[in-house]
Amino acid sequence: MTETTSPALRTALAYYQAWTSHDLGKAMSYIADDIVCDAPAGRLVGADAYRGFMGQFVQILTGSQLIAAFGDDTTALIMYDTETAPVKSAPGAECVTVIDGKITYNRFIFDRAPFDAARKTAT
Amino acid sequence: MTETTSPALRTALAYYQAWTSHDLGKAMSYIADDIVCDAPAGRLVGADAYRGFMGQFVQILTGSQLIAAFGDDTTALIMYDTETAPVKSAPGAECVTVIDGKITYNRFIFDRAPFDAARKTAT
Image (cartoon, rainbow over all chains, first blue to last red):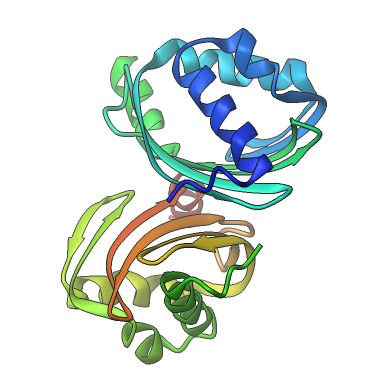
């Protein structure tokens, strides 16, 4: 399932391993300064915005499991499940563009509904 | 990006082409009778439940665009954007298991939040 011959996938998996190990600093080393990320809540531009977004998520992350991962020269597509403090199963999918070992674009999909519901229950 | 050498991907793309063309009957020809689908709202079991779920979505579908698609012998992973009547951009990702040309398992991710918001606005 995991094609390690893809340079884009190698970067995407190294990035995934880093953030799922709560190593935000290492994760950010794979992120281009001018990254553009299309996330469910809208577009994030630049590494600072991206770090803010991922930092919040890593704080609530309690577990993760890779479901599938594929890639070619410049594109990697991965799907995983995460366990978070508010939501037991929060799967996500990322399609990233990788140039010179850095993720320059990320199309990121996850379901915000259970997080919205958990927030409502908490307040 | 699209590896047509993967039999699982061939099936996943034929299925995708069918439902995005509003041909639910053809789409269901790629679905195993005992399909299990883990969707955001929970697990669907069996082709009838799956048809009900997809049928509702196909009714509101107004456009689609494939973002990325990869696969190997038995697994395909695709990401796409859809345009629907209530939600302008509703991207999704599916990781499917294919056996003998039929999808037996689908892990399906999309963001329910904009659909929830559109329903609230409509009522």
